[in-house]
Structure formats: C-alpha cells, structure tokens
Length: 112
Image (cartoon, rainbow, N blue to C red; front, side, top):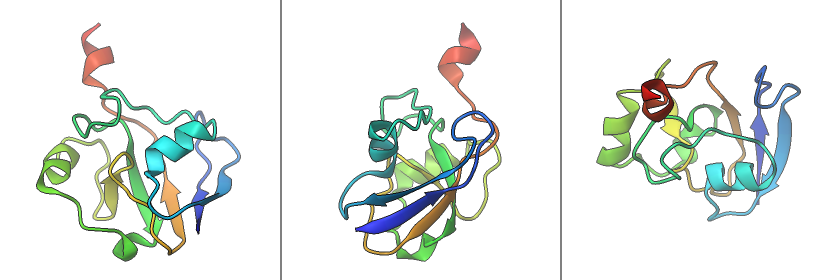
C-alpha cells in the first residue's frame, strides 16, 4: 500500500485528497474508482494526454515510461520533467504526491 496525495485542483478535486492504493494498481483507474473524475478520453489506452499528471513526490520510484507514453507526453499541455500519464502509472510501495495540470488537450472534444 502506498499513500497517494492528490493536490487540490479547482475543478476536479477542489480540496485535494489523500488515498491508500494497493501496489500493482493503476493510478488513473483507482482515482476514477474513488470518484475523482480524471479526464481519460482514450479509455486508459495510452493514446491521448488527458490523464496527464505531474508527480511531485515519488517520481523516481515509478517504473520508467514506455516509448509510447513518452511519445504521447510530448503532446501534453504543461509538460514537466516529472510528467506521466496516470493511466500508465502502476502504484508501487512508495508514497506519491501528484498534481493535476490546470488544462488538458482533448483532441476528441476539440473537434466537436
């Protein structure tokens, strides 16, 4: 189990939240299960950047991003060195602190 702290986000999680998540769980899927409405236009398939997060603590404890994830991250709004797609983050044993960016780029909703 790891503690995951989500920093406050004006729309998605105004007061922030701290959760305990079992090792081996995917971050985005668990946040959604806990009622935190993280945008996920590609249904968690690493085909967009809407679930982009910035890992403020615990980044080095995560498995390295795949080439596919890195390619998608290049398109993310507000990219930082500690950026990841939450659909690709597998929780380990170390605690994490994450920030949800103020904006996302959602190609599907941008077209409509």
